Length: 374
Image 1: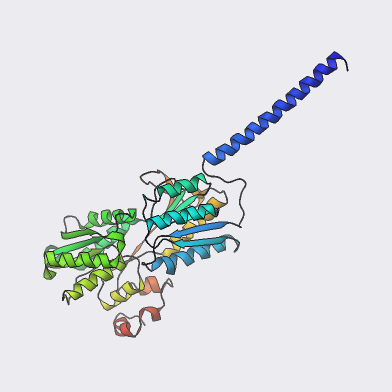
Image 2: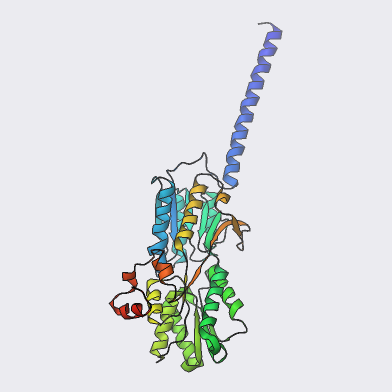
């Protein structure tokens, strides 16, 4: 080979090597961006995905009775039955939920639907999921950390609905006595929103004799708080009780009865639990908030499947929400309904949440008849 041909061959080989090295560099950079960016996985996923579902507790009836089966059903519908939902309940234990997140990461789920026990405590787990390329949908409570999407109800509106119902029930009595406010747990960001909404309606229109933030939302803690309020204020001075949910309302009503209160003051609630609906029928609880769980569950499933498949979640989530750590989270906020004895038939019965026979057991049959629930 002459000198000219040797020079051409060397130049060609050098060029090929440079192109090869550049291609390797581009591939590495692309891979690094995938890891450091928005948690996108390699390649688009089909319907054969695994969805991790983490719910916070099992004392409130809604999670096991409604949320879990509704989410499982919708995920199945969206994926032709090919997706798998892996479920764990934290039983109100924030440390356990953090471990459950770690387990989901180890098992390489494709997406997480997370209802946080403690919105701040779970932030580290959310970050770890993100670093592992697993997007996270915050469900019902807006967890902190790099959340990809969020669905819940309009939680300030929940508080406003409760506050308005209490004022409606009190009428002229609003100025004659004091009310007790039984708020939820400080570890639940929704509790602060319920409280804010309720205060916006009640402020200046009632006298708040005692107010509590109830540890872990537990009915027994609400019961103890109510006993304290009765001792401090006097059972005859309490004209109404704002209760942030139905479980606590049950504990409150038990405390009032134990104190010898026969004409129970109006008590609010939330979640439309079966026991609460029956108390409403019997005239023991005035109101609850009916939250159409199917709307919330469907939104969570749709966003989770979209994220797992690498699709744009904003096609589903047309609103946004801000947490203390993340702004502009794509969100779906579902409207709520005030539930009283007047609309039981048009809400929880009509929507198939409860059958008439579930509500109107022999103990409540006469009360149901009086309300026309037949």
